[in-house]
Length: 300
Ligand code: CO8
Image (cartoon, rainbow, N blue to C red; front, top):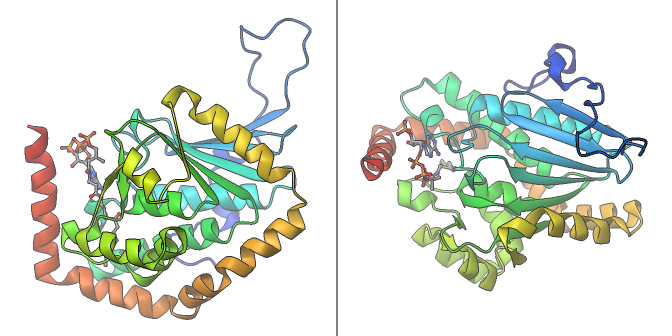
């Protein structure tokens, strides 16, 4: 049985089944063979797998801000599982179809004013997404083409390589402390594994969001490129990583990440309990409500 938040294979949306090849683009010169491409889509995420290169492009398309709702997380995990089990797929580039936003992180409305059963289901879906992404055998490249706070940053941190658009208006970081909440140990572990203990400790305590150039300086992202070159660069990096034999790269990745993954797997139920207890506190609910109001005020 699948845990709540993850749909069992037999009741997954038919849209995720093998789609027929899209009609030829009007730009495609007549007579030229089409690159074999399969696309899967739902109302949150679009995936296109180029079978000739073995690379999938996963685009978040949940406006206005690609917030990671229960539905989004469920579709994300399904998409990753589907690609993972597809022998034609060796790597995935994760990016956004929403201008200026990669992902605004966990959907705060899922953590506000709901009951404990809902919080538990939501948190299990967050864990599931991270476990799948962080442990993926595929090469995972984040093409961060917009702001990426908190859970959005976690998605990027969980990939093998991060390339960000060099726009200083785009920021990234684990800003949980600014919301009056605490990033769980596995967010922290993932962050430490990328930037090191000192930078992670300071950034987590201050809930720092870094503009792209600063994020690059700190090693939070590996490369900055002009936005229009982002996907081209991601494809080039992917080709470089895929040039190595899969088994050696996969075993190395597993060796580097296993301890952190095992820690959550061993404490999964306890982590869900901690989350539901923490998020149900009236003081925490109040902080989240105030934060949402601040977002709305800032807008008007
Ligand atoms: N969840 C839900 N709704 C959101 C979120 C979110 N994370 N982010 C933005 N929205 C909503 C806004 O409230 C607004 O709603 P409405 O249109 O109804 O007023 C709409 O999306 C558009 O937002 P903005 O107008 O702010 O859009 P901008 O393009 O100006 O800015 C930003 C986009 C930069 C993403 C901005 O919205 C922002 O900073 N959002 C907050 C991001 C954030 O702080 N996320 C943290 C979420 S918590 C998390 O991911 C980890 C939690 C770990 C849990 C640990 C617990 C123990």
